[in-house]
Amino acid sequence: MRNRLLPTPWILDSSRGLRLSSIFILYVAQGIPIGLFWYAIPAWMTANGAEAADVAWVLGLTALPWSLKFFNGFIMDRYAFLPMGRRRGWILGAQGVMVAVFLMAAALQPAADQVLLLGLLGFLGNLATTVQDVGVDGMAVDLLEENERARGGGMMFGGQLIGTAAATAGTGLAVATLGASGAYLLAALGVLAVNAYLVMIRERDGERHLPWSAGESHPVNLAHHADRWWPILSITLRSVFLPVSLFWAVIMLTKGSQYGFMAGVTPLVGVGAAGMSEVQVTSLTGTAQLIAGIAGLTLGGWLGERLGAKWSVILMLCCWLVFHGSMIVGQNLWSNTGFVQAMIIGWFSLDTLLTVAAIPITMRLCRPEVAATQFTIYMALNNVGISLGAVLLGFSDRLGGLASLFPVLIVANGIALLILLAVRFPRRRLR
Image 1 (cartoon, rainbow, N blue to C red):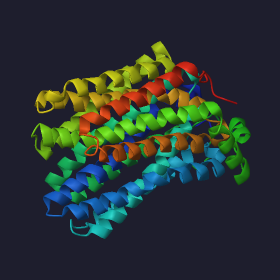
Image 2 (image 1 turned 30 degrees about the horizontal axis):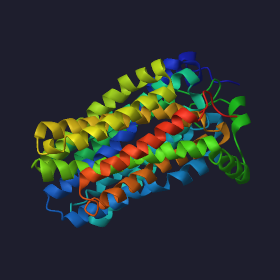
Image 3 (image 1 turned 180 degrees about the horizontal axis):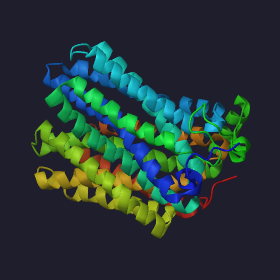
Image 4 (image 1 turned 60 degrees about the horizontal axis):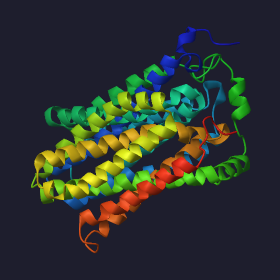
């Protein structure tokens, strides 16, 4: 018997507005632990006398789960409580673990010198966040219709940046006024509110709100669910090794390498060349993330709908070419604070807009049976590119300084543009 406790508009599959707004809300929730554990807690540790090595150790443990996301997708595609939908049960559980970690941290009240405990809390909180992240990505691939994916990409990454910026500011203020425990409780309250919202909605008609509610598995989920390991692995491998997928991998690596390179250039130019303080650079970075999030949420989705995914990516790569060229031509302006401010806001915004533009093509390449796994692989390629960009930055001294590396990125973007112009990427999801 189908559950009719709530009206049809609370079903994601039947409401475009609910799909897009829910993805935005869930990505904002994802930004709460990121803002707390990646920014607010390290700043609090530093203010309370923690050494740089201790802060780095805590951040290392905090970041570790993000390198294991592939396994999350693999498990999530294999196991699902289908009466609650393919992804919603995982997301509810992950956000429940986030709340539990925040409450545990508030109860334990670790001091700034309790590095192991802070690191473990950061690890557990971000482990739950990565599960939530993969679950929301899989839900977006499963439910968004073709004409919604550009706007959905803006909701996803715009929401995450806005959530991270808001959480960094909110929990940072709570740490300063109420202490670290107040920040943990504020974060728990925020995620708990999103979980309450998630209980109210359903992926498809007839599913359960909670495990003990009335409801049944939807036929679409039964058809797409792979209940054995080998089909998941074989479908994933066949999909990611398609020629069109391998060409897309080059673009994802290029995209990530620019982020990794510019993340290192920002403090080197801001502090080293322009003479700004570390506090000024970090504050400007936070402002740039917020601006980039709003740009992705608004301009990114609009461009995707007007130009289409492929031409939006082409446009953003051309903008990156102009950006890299301006960094070479304007090398004498690197000591100018205004130029540095424009540089930081510019590259954060370009990266976000390129990410939003690329989301529809990435989703189209994902097979329904392994959507969580395959989408995570493409995101992992982006992360590999970030590491490559950081490695590239390490060669700057040998090659004559930072300015000598921007031509390398221009060549990489040129190759990506040629691929986009020559390869016919899918306009609908591959089957």
